[in-house]
Amino acid sequence: MNDYLDNIFEDIKLDENQKKAILDENKYQMIIAGAGSGKTTTMAAKVKYLVDIKKINPQNILLISFTNKAVQELKDKIENEFGINANICTFHKLALSILKDAGVSYKIISDNSLIFKQFLIDYINLNGKNKLYKIVNNYVNRKALKEEKLDVEKFLKLKLVIDQFNYFYCGQNLKINKKQQRFILFAKQYKQYLEKYMDTNKLIDFDTMIFKATEQIDNCTLKYQYVIVDEYQDISKERYELLKKMVLKMESNLTVVGDDWQAIFAFAGSRVDLFMHFQDDMGASCNKIVNTYRNSQELINIAGNFIMKDEKQIKKELKSNKHLDNPIKLIKYTNDWDKADILFNLVKYIITNNKKQTILLLGRYKFDIEFLKHSELFNIIDDDKIYIEKLNITLPYLTVHSAKGLGFDQVIILNMTNGEFGFPSNKQDDKIIKLIKQNDATEERRLFYVALTRTKNYVYLLVPRNKVSPFINEIRKMNGVSEILKKDFKVN
Image 1 (spheres, one colour):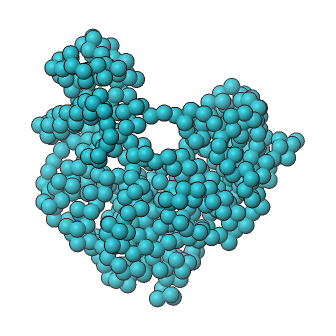
Image 2 (image 1 turned 90 degrees about the horizontal axis):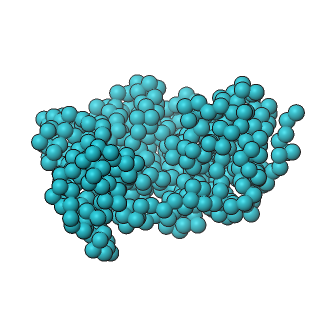
Image 3 (image 1 turned 90 degrees about the vertical axis):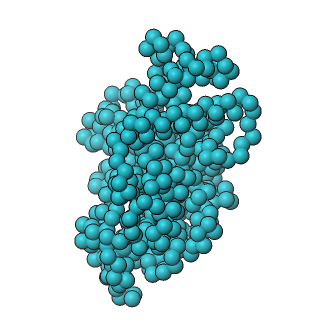
């Protein structure tokens, strides 16, 4: 079997951890895959093993991920490289296939804002004088609704609060006061209104798609022998319930793959606790893939020590054959003009010494590149690319959330300040969202871990001289973190 596994790929040798995960024949299996450890490679090799050795029909294998980009990455490995025509899709596409198989047809709508607006009009007409209306009136008032003069920002904020309620509330026992109870009642009434409206008009949106598919599982004739879920740390309660009901109904084997250290989508309903409890809930085996092929050992030592300050995280000791002295470099700046000048010289230094290497500019927020608008050295293109005319180079700009799963030769993190829109974010949630949201203070810590591990070589952090991020204060004394001055990378 070793000979077979050693020759699955022409240019990649699977390590012993990957081989063990591929050969694991437990009905329910969890693979914990550290950053840069070859997660996609392992899943693709497992599919090939199932087809070649276990003689499973590719059409009886289902792979699920969360984004079209992740699905395409799996297709590139499994369909294009191996020629295996397995079913690879997002959760939403899976939900649609279940509904279609069950004979249920809906028209998909991408935005239900108009339905929410009509609900508000109907609701306020009926309840305009009660105490609940006073809460809603903080966002939207009756006169604005009737005169079509809505404050769009406030309207969308109220809708966000209600939508996030649907993500987070899920019936848990909350210690809430009467005012909060009335708001939750309001949210429930909207949910009922929305469901009735869409059922009557045969409509479905992306949120209710998962719920409706779960309802129709028993009427579905689809059959999968093996189900593999990518990025399982991002699972929501709704997706978890769909997945579990489907697997039990079809008697499928289930493998979930992910990393709790990279769970960063709580704002979209993800529940890292569902990842942490998977083993106990399903009686699953667990394999850890700990050899990372992206980062140096020195960097993952720093990032690992940083993330494990929260002992609730699953312990894993990542290993790398790559070694670099001081892979994390801190550069202080005084103001936005100084910051822009430092960034220009840093990029010039990197491309002068490493002409073909990729560079990623990374931010906590989309607007972390705003300071470049005041500099003649940079042009911002479509909010996600930076053109530097004097160097004739265009660099990608991503937020940490959108950079997850990607790797670049060099990474520059632009925002390491302490404040409401710093890193970590100190932005306060709406008081209602704060009530119903899963309390996970570690999410910002995990986000910084993801930021640090995007690099294949060095990560440069731009740090203000005042209002320094507490994350910087925490790592600056660790071995492998050094401070450099502008003169150290100045290129004439």
